[in-house]
Image 1 (cartoon, rainbow, N blue to C red):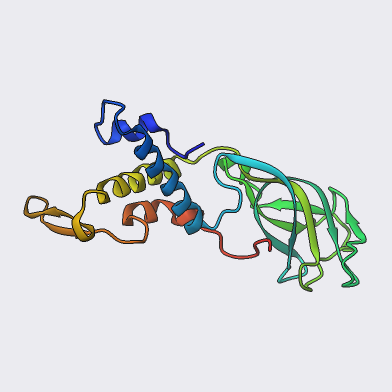
Image 2: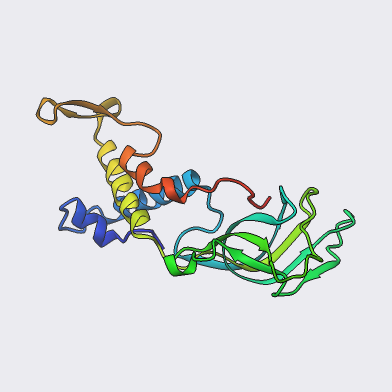
Length: 200
């Protein structure tokens, strides 16, 4: 499933026939891949998947994760032997940011609960945190959909752009296509980039 539909892309480009549906869909697929690479998502937007992932905590009181909707099991390797023998209960941790679900966003951090009694901490050794849960984004944010339309439109225009140049005097000068994301698409996606603590 693309972040934007073929019908939405055709509408944005004022295309009314179906002659180029296949290459247009390819532009959408390519835009999705560019977006995924830019924000460094491993699941994608509008997709959730039940998985087990491993993380390295930088501090004892929290660990950064990939976007996650819910946690079914959390365990830590307190001896550094790869056994993850310390199981956490749902009362031992909280998902953060706390208001993420209210903002229609997944969580990106697991904190030690202030109600855990101080008995548990995250070990800071390499990949000593094991998280099983539902990862990803339940829906496609509006900004991501718009970025996909902008990027797919730029890819479509580049097909007929000699040497990557589009525009002309009527547009205020020549605009040269880039291998990077369209500047407006990049600006829309900036808030969704992951900053660290990702699973390996």
